[in-house]
Structures are given as C-alpha cells and as structure tokens.
Length: 378
Ligand code: CMC
Image (cartoon, rainbow, N blue to C red):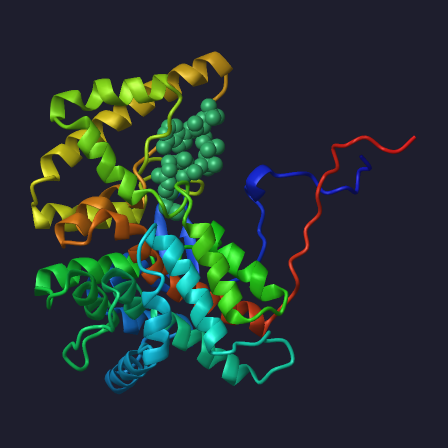
C-alpha cells in the first residue's frame, strides 16, 4: 500500500462524510443540537412542526408561520383513496417491512422521478408530502382502513398517536410522544440518514432515498432495539433477577438492547430526557426499568473492566442509549411494541427528508474506495 493510500476505518468510524447544518451530536459532552438550538429544550417545549420548520428554514417559525406550516403538513399528509387501498393491502406481517414497502409504493404511485435536472421546488414538495404522510401510513397499515376522522388542526404527533391507539390522546400522553418524536427526529450522520443521503446523491428519486432510510433503520443495531427492550423486561421479570440475567446474557456473548452507542462517551441526552418523561408517567414498569438499567450498567462495567485487563488497554464505557427509555415511554402511552420501530421511523423520516434536501442542494456523488484483500492475477 503506498503512503498516499487513504487508511481504512471499519464502519467509517471517525470519518466525516458530509457537511450538515441540521444537527450536531457532541458525544464527549453528551449534547445534541438542532440547527443552533439545544434539541432537548426543543423537545420539552416545542411542537414537531416548529422543529421541522427550524430544520427547513434555519430558524423557528413565528406564530403565523407555525400554523400555516402545520396546516400544510396536515393537508399534504393525507392519502388519496387509491393510496389507502394500496397501503391497506400491505397490512400484516412485520410492520416496518410493510412501512418500507408502503413508502416505496406511494412514491411509485405519485410517479416520482430522479431529481437530477428537474425543478427543485417540485422535488422539495415531493419530499415534504411523502414525509407528512407517515402517520397516515402507519394507521392504515394497522387498521387496514382509511384513517379515522380527527379534529382539524391536530398536529403530526397527535394524528400519529390517535391513529395508532384509535382514540384522542390525553394531553400527557401527547406531550410524551411529541417529546420522543422531536428527540429522535435527527441525529447527525447516523446509518439510516447516511443511507438516504447516499441514495439521493445518485440523483435517484426522493422516494428511493427515503425508502433506503427505512430499510437501514430496521436493524436491531440501529432503530430496531426498543421492541426487544420490552422483551428484555419480560425476560428479566423481577428486580432481583436483573443482574443474574444480565451476567448470563453477557457470558453467552449476547448484546443487551438499549445499551452502547457509537458516538456518545457519556450519557445520551435523549435518554436522560426520556427517563424524566418515564418517571413522570410513573407507570407499572418504572421500578423494574430502573433496576434493570442500574444492574445492566454494573454488569457491563464489570465486563468492560475485565476486558481492559485482558487486552491491557482502555475499553469503552457503555451507557444507556435512547432506545431503553423509549420502550418504557411508548408502552405507557399505549403504542404496541411491534410499532416502536415504525414510531421511530415516523420521527426520523423528517430528518431523512431534510438531509435529502440538503444533499440535493449541494450534491456530490458518494463513491468511497475499498481496500482489496483478494489475490492479484499472476
Ligand atoms: N451489549 C453488550 N456488549 C456491547 C453492547 C451491548 N449493548 N454494545 C457494545 N458492546 C461491546 C461490544 O461487544 C464490543 O465488544 P467486543 O470488542 O468485545 O466485540 C464493544 O462493546 C464495542 O462495541 P461495538 O459494536 O464496536 O460498538 P459500535 O460503536 O459499533 O456499536 C451499537 C454501537 C449501538 C451498535 C452497540 O452498542 C450495540 O450493539 N448496542 C445494542 C443495540 C442497541 O441498543 N441499538 C440502538 C442504538 S441507539 C439508537 C440509534 O442511534 O440508532
């Protein structure tokens, strides 16, 4: 290998692959920024539409802009009768696979074309309309029918929770879900956002770019963890069993869902925020969840200490990630566990859409190199 050959980084760890003004994850300090604003403060105090507007426009909206944008998202978020039939046919099976297929099918039905050499205003509308439709898509996939009638001016979060549970949410439940949906809306160049940007960088249609995001989010190392976190609570069963269960899992070489993160070297601020929400909810899981959190952290710390001794070098401290407290919060508001990943998608689709717009506005095809490890011809 010549000296000028770039070095290989497994998982692209430590590689900066794009510039973005949308969000910044400071893994050392445990801070998350959305376009110049503390994401946790936004999640606790703002609506999804306000934060979505911030990502689009680079500033928070005025009251008039907020209500106009909210109304636009509501209108664009409706599915045509033909689309309802199309999506309803996908009901059943694994919900996120159905969601992925539905997003792709809607984009095809709307005849989305590659964005290259097109009027970018039109492409922009396609992105906003596709992302706005996520709550209706999840509802139709769940019920197999057209979305139930909701009060006019219900926001994105309210339409989502209402559609999934079938009843108008209480103010507390709505606030909990809106907080979650804002917290997870964007997160630097995570795997699914990267996937969306890579697809967009080829000039492909924006439906293909968003579909790439859904497929990538579905894996348990990324967005597929919160359902298995509840399975973990069920498997642990009681506070006393938390540590023995964790030790047995680690001894068997298994990963514990809801722990560890590529970027955070301290507490994930989203997780701390959701823990506060869960404590306020004070549901039946809270005591077990707290015990499982502390016992698993202790088991992971012991394991990492032993590994550091064996390897004779420092190893990563593992903390709770966003998925752990997500599971507790979403279960409490009545979202079934099989829809946790779809709920994550309903939030992150907004981030994918904005990253796709950003990529398109200043595009460069992603085309990294690979390090050849095969043999050379004689
Ligand atoms: N349980 C047990 N061991 C772990 C865990 C865990 N949850 N996370 C990391 N480790 C160990 C891992 O086994 C590895 O040890 P070794 O070198 O002996 O193989 C070491 O810590 C470093 O792990 P890594 O896989 O190199 O770290 P990464 O930065 O590639 O992975 C992660 C980050 C999130 C994929 C990983 O921590 C994990 O698998 N967590 C469990 C799944 C999970 O909770 N996913 C949700 C992620 S947060 C939501 C999101 O942003 O998408």
